[in-house]
Image 1 (cartoon, rainbow, N blue to C red):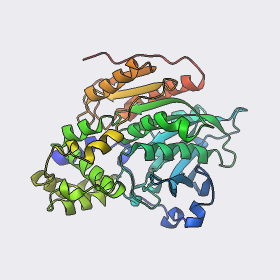
Image 2: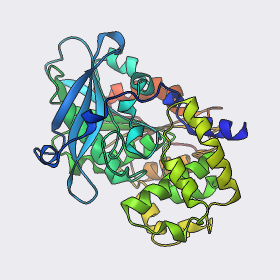
Image 3: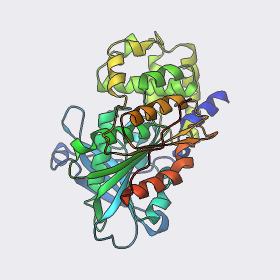
Image 4: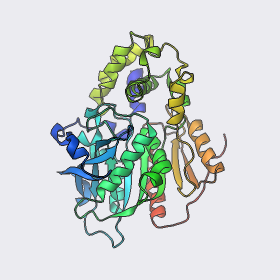
Length: 390
């Protein structure tokens, strides 16, 4: 039961959804299709049913760029409010999802519960926003998912906004915000850092992040003795050894490597998925890492530093929410990051969610985050309410 509770706390509130049900052939693109347009252009779409409040929804396969600079296909979803768009185009909110897994079958757009997984969706649609939800590379569409690789996630977020602009009758404008939780909070911060360079034609007006992964070396080191932390570390190592060709066998014991492979093959979308991870998670308690201080060894030390978000441009305001009872993303680590942004002159609103753990950080901050984003779309001067030192 302790493992179940730990995994529940690690997963997002929207992870307990119906299993994946999308047709796999939608996600398969030929090299010619992938290379046939600029980043952010659509390869194909299909209509999704069951949207809330009369909105239209589309599953998208769009072009992007991989870490090696080569064109790739990325999947995701866009939800468009009903009715005609305003003269200046609809604002866009790019949702960046928390951890769902590290293999293609784990893409949220394949799940029957995609609309429930986007925190604050109905409120955003009611305000007239288009909402995009990238799967990230290697989730949904084929490829290795660069888990917690900031530049990869940022590009897929930006290109999802570009793709939404091509949907019929969407009337997407140039202005957008990004809103993410946990892994998605990490993606949101990197989008803030890189958006201007990646997509100068778009106007990022704000970044909102709930319980974001910030200092990765601290995150993995602090959590290695917890069930959620062992899962997170296993997925990070599994992904990075493929993305960066980093030597897994020098970090993970030979007995644990098959267990890591097993965990990497499982998604986090339902209670069934949680129970399927119990046995391998328990096995990692007995034998996992050769050295728990692997974050100090190369190339892992450099990779963790590279994928730890730094300062955002001062022109990009930031909203950060953090539960005070979070045992996965430590509250003080998030406070320290917010303080660093404040000292650098960024406009930061920091919300401490009293008694809230990791699981519910996005759900419990969604109203405040959306109100904050609405002010950014209206051009109101952003507040700066920095986190008090503790």
